[in-house]
Length: 566
Image (cartoon, rainbow, N blue to C red; front, side, top):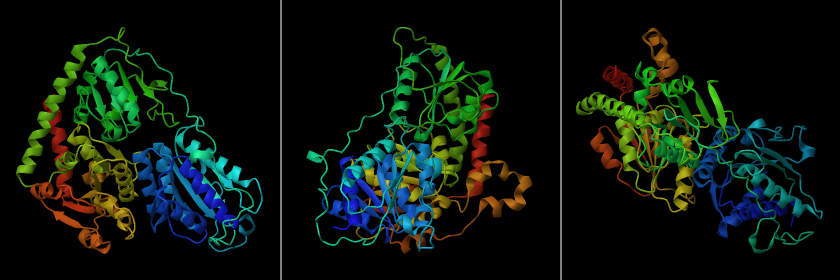
């Protein structure tokens, strides 16, 4: 057996022993030893291998697999520019605390800096975005390396999972490999390649200790804000809010899950001028990273706030936090103060906001308009029990926020750095992992620019696993989100369309046909409901909307709510 094959065999075996069940590969020459080892593990049923020709798509596929499963997922590339294509997914994994393993093949040290083909400086390529960087020594025929390879693999898995005192996140293993790069058929090696007995990992994991139980010392007039973050934190915060009678503002990807008799406040309420100033809480408890709404940001910035620190960051972009807590306080059955009037005030205002918003939305629907928040609500409602919804950044996730909470719905989003890139691949990966764990069908809700940015995520080889995933594309021919921002003001009308609107005129049906992906185009809500009926496999539902009408309706809804609460 040649050294490159020996290392790859041991590395993949130890990854499986450490809990890896999915792996993603992009083709390349220098990474061939790892490719053969992954293929053998896949054939033996030890893991499931996914192959993608585009490294960026491969990385986001691995990201989705890791987000949905909670397990580390390796993505393997060859050397050179292939490694740079992983960087966007690395940044998302860093900020969202997702255990992504970057296994980059490299030229051996003697070929670096010599002008050798397809060689770049890969050492520390991803900077501080990774929890750990390891240069795995170029293998040779020497004894003692097997223990080192296995120990190093355990170390990087622990770093990815947050066992070493840092939060979960991406790790980078760079592997310099010498020729020959393909198996030679000889199983002999200078020492046994075996791992621990009974498929145990070489080094047992010792997970980080649980956070200290914190007392509930928050005042009765508190509001809980749930942003994108760990599901366990959201569930703990909901339990506390239920016990104390506090209103909750929950972003779609907060992991709030089933509503336990908790008032989920509509985001529209917070944006009503004057209402929040007249009902300012004594404290805001922030769990996760709220990033979707300026009104939520104003609530947090304008009130004394406690924020729960996770993912190794200082979660206080406004600089207004009075305390940073290592976890969600536990409900205190004996000492908790409850103010029924506080919850009733927010409850009545929430009902008024919902009623005021309904009128312009219903009028638009009755006029035949395909209303984007209504589309988001219909898509969420189509997700079956134990299903999954992956939502794109920009306007779709805000439409889902506006549509209101969906009890029990599992929602995933790339809100770590809130980019639109890689969303199709992320959704495919999340759906695959979700269904591998016994979950039901999955849906994705994305905008047209997000879809175009990663339309290559639909390119799956004939032997690749395919999820039951319906990708709903809201096609308003450009970037509607900018129409809601200052750039959309009338004073910028001359430059807006080219710089921000970015109309593209792409035939999405033809684009889907190029990859053999089933596609249906709908132009009204009746057609949408029919198209959302569950079907096996990967398919695309294109929903045609009007960008200018969507922006105008958003403003009309907010104006109606403001008037009702004045």
